[in-house]
Length: 258
Ligand SMILES: Cc1cc2nc3c(=O)[nH]c(=O)nc-3n(C[C@H](O)[C@H](O)[C@H](O)COP(=O)(O)OP(=O)(O)OC[C@H]3O[C@@H](n4cnc5c(N)ncnc54)[C@H](O)[C@@H]3O)c2cc1C
Ligand code: FES
Image (tube, rainbow, N blue to C red):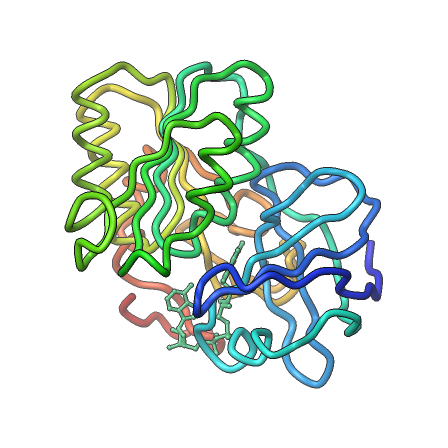
């Protein structure tokens, strides 16, 4: 499915992150992503931060040229959407710890909301550099999830890494599953914590993408294609991959350190 849609709402979530809502009446599930074409610029993969009918949403953090350009695109502008692609979070577990770092929280938010609505107990540990960069803390608390935050500078919640908060929560109470998305170094630590507490983990992984349908090899991660085998993987699988949390491939396919 590929459509040109109009941005019907634009929300500045943090000083560096914008959400676009757009009409897209194609069923989408939390964990899946779409390819977003920014006319005159690039096409980039984006997790869906809103998956409900009728309007979907993506939440874009300014990183490189396309995502920086995205911050200045206004309501009413046309963009291209193709997808959704990839797999989804398993919403069956009843006690879930969702650990998000920076824009990684975008993919966890709709999954957490849906899980709460289906009766699951969801705890979210959210990390950011500083309070104003915390993403979706209010949205998740309003959904009924318990929210704990950590900031690098201590401006909100625990000072330091969200991985420390996640590890404490795993020590304090039992969870059936840990979901995580964010910088891979963070995800690796969360995956190791989940393993040491005997809890099954799932991580949503980002790799450079071109086709998004398993044809071009751009998104190779070990023996997997992130676009079709992921982006959500069991963290036991991720931990078994030498490159997870250490290297990725650049647009030319060259392996570069993360
Ligand atoms: C399945 C999937 C889902 C994604 N979901 C989201 C999402 O919900 N929100 C979102 O903001 N982004 C998401 N991304 C990342 C997004 O696709 C782009 O990689 C990102 O927006 C940067 O693109 P760019 O063209 O602006 O930067 P590029 O020109 O590709 O990169 C510019 C610089 O930024 C660095 N960089 C690029 N991406 C990242 C990153 N994620 N973390 C750290 N450094 C980076 C590059 O190494 C480079 O140095 C997702 C990626 C995938 C594969
Ligand atoms: S993006 Fe082409 S194989 Fe995954």
